[in-house]
Image 1 (cartoon, helix red, strand yellow):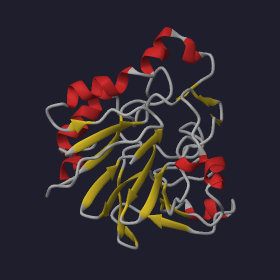
Image 2: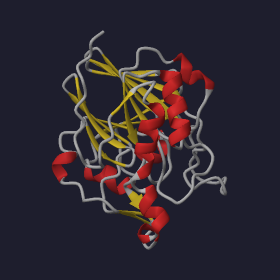
Image 3: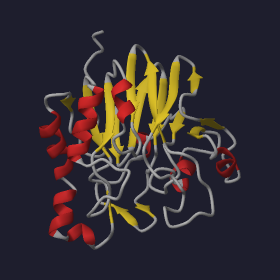
Image 4: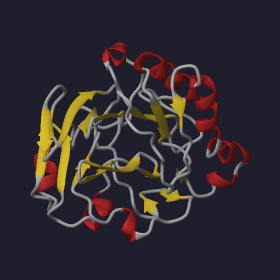
Length: 253
């Protein structure tokens, strides 16, 4: 596994390469990547893309175009036509509870507590599809990809999760509703009890200028450390810098 930054993770399992919410470029709208750029080999060979919701820092069209027009993309139900009209013909839609199989890989869409209109909560026109997380199963390993979400009670119903990818912050100096901060992410870890958790959605993107402020410099590094301290009783935490490989333990069950 490789944490590529923000919510983007490269997961290699069962002979497949899965990319989550790919953000691969140096600029995303008004945001700038504040960690080293990604080399093309970090996304080479991708077989399947999982999109959790339509926000621009999770469904990023320029990054998807880097993967080629024939890449298979899984989106929340209701988003498929919008993406197909933008030149991506191989789009599958999953609603909560629905499952897709790709070879030995199984992907199930899960609930996420997060507003998911493409243009944010102030607008009602344009594309909308409910946000989801994903459970990825292959090779005896179960990986929970939370996407963007706040706490919700049904997290406790997830069982035998080997790896959880939990968001612990965002890209700005504050968080709106529908997000996990380090303390709430630790509570999510208590509910889920994954064997291993990799904190994501931190330390990658910032508004130019703000990244140099004292507060933002702190928020670019502290959230995963605070989460690791708060969640230590519930899961093994692997804090990995954006762009680096994550060494996962072998599945023992």
